[in-house]
Image 1 (tube, rainbow, N blue to C red):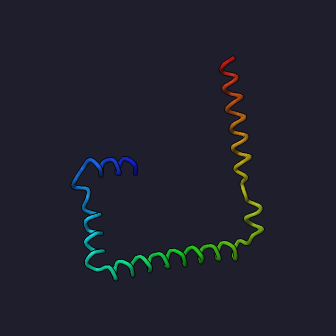
Image 2: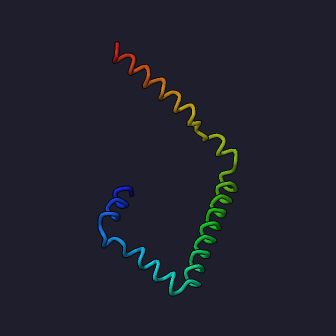
Image 3: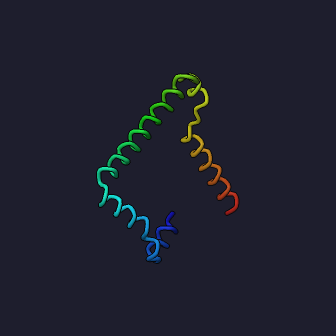
Length: 90
């Protein structure tokens, strides 16, 4: 994505998405706002539905059993990396 952003800055032809968006917003502001509101509401409702399904069907006990503590994984990896680095240095 950063590369595309840099390319956008160097290539003047890459400004067409912004030009289209600006034209749509200028000509049809009500439609643009309606699309944004509908998209936001649909995303919010989809997230709520997925959260309810995940909570209701597998249940909270299931998620507690399979939970992976990433702090422990990170700590173990850090200790292993330090040990390997020390072993290679000696």
